[in-house]
Image (tube, rainbow, N blue to C red):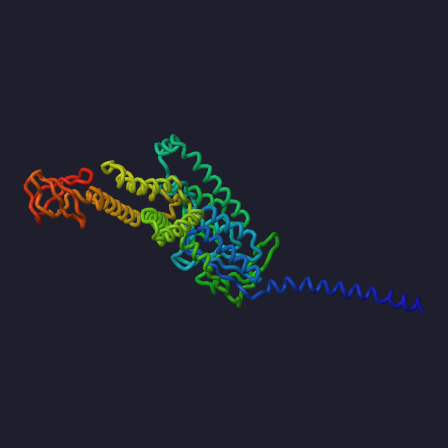
Length: 459
């Protein structure tokens, strides 16, 4: 009996093993197939300067696409460039993305300048719509245009001046680093390395047609539908493996920035940050000069904290920030220190210069109109403060001798032969002494006070 059961198991086990092995192969083949055949695609958009808020939005968008097992991510670009740190964060996300990313410069008239060019080179597929351009990828240091970006070629005299102040070597290091970075991206995605280096070193740009001819981009598409049609059947490399795109009839999901990204983008605008900082400073100053109002202090503290947060994602020149604070302090001190206008004018000058150099990135500048308007407003407030201080200094006192001297009173009785008597003033009876005969009911003016006795003159 045991031998029979053993014989039955001996014959069943090989069949069971084959069945389980086949089932495991079936599961392993079905899972990636279902993921590859996902009918979803995700559209992300960069419209404006690239900041920390934009990199956060792109990171969240690609994470969403990976969680939804999307077949494709389309990153629509229209940017003048932006922060190097934010750009590199975006590129790290693109390079590690499990979902193919197609960067698409659109709509017509859009551009992918500076940081946008690096993002195009880092994408699995680079595409542009007609009448668009890319390039001008030279890094900018301390808000100054480097040689090659604002002119064709530096003269020997300009080069000598630059080397004399020590700027040339530092800028050259930055350019070399950027050139190596974009060349590495070009090698990874099999794109034109020579032109990529020219875009960094010489600041050159290309139209969409020229970019396609030079193998800088992969295709030109009129719109999203045309783009998806041309992408179908294209092979891309992700994580060391090849993947063929199946983009026909993909369902497009547009991922808009959430409230957090929109808020960060709003306060990261240089002009908004500048206004927040000014409101914050003046709010706190008003609260210090008028304790108990509370609201100006609360609003000022909130605005100042928001401004400081935005400064973390903006290329802030802290010398400019210090000049702005010094300028405001000097203008306030002018009202209390007799400097004959030196502190006030110096404060306005420091305020304007600090505002101009506050942001280092040339693509993110504070409006000159806003700076001038704020300086004029500060000057107006300074003049108003000085007027009030002078008026208060010249104002008659409201208590003590300041209140009595010069006041008009009335004689209670006729004064005696020594010119002494009593006067009624401010509801009080005072001993008084005068030089002329003074009669009851006569108006008198207080000249001085000696203890509890007033010296008066007849009116």
